[in-house]
Image (cartoon, rainbow, N blue to C red; front, side, top):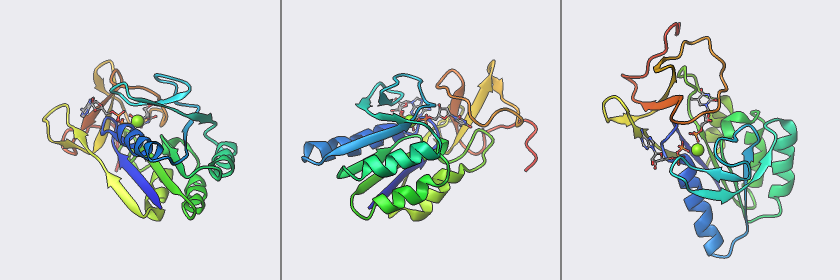
Length: 188
Ligand code: ADP
Ligand code: TMP
Ligand code: MG
């Protein structure tokens, strides 16, 4: 069984991943949580939600060696969870699809980058998933459901030509609805 938890930042993806893993552990199932070494926002050895929830995690490089480590180590557990899947190469999707034949696999990641473009690895995992849990945050401008993530530089919308990967939290990003998501210089 492969469950994909997707949405913008602050939607509760990590909180939901932790909730689903914890109940499996309480029921006596063995579980391993993985996250990419790129994400060191709050804690290098845990997956950490914006609200302070934490769970111990294996930190692996966000490249083919990290995918191989998840595929190999994951086989030893009843439950395999991976947070921040958007930072891994698309081959993570096939690795998780294979693992899902023998165990529960939970994958959480961003739907879209700050420009509103889909993250390929998340998309690919969604295609293989038995269940997609699509979460929304609350738009910081109007309070409606937020499906996108606004990047801010000095309080202003970041232009479309910035780096795709920029680790951050509430100081750099806000949850926004479609109407209030702004990307100066975006062509599409
Ligand atoms: P994700 O992994 O999807 O970024 P987390 O599980 O880390 O989400 O954090 C979710 C928490 O973020 C919420 O429970 C809430 O405390 C906090 N939060 C901050 N800003 C918002 C927002 N705009 N909408 C909803 N929750 C928010
Ligand atoms: P989160 O979904 O758990 O909040 O974490 C998302 C991480 O992804 C956070 O470190 C910020 C980063 N990020 C990017 O690198 N590029 C982007 O375009 C967006 C929206 C987020
Ligand atoms: Mg998260």
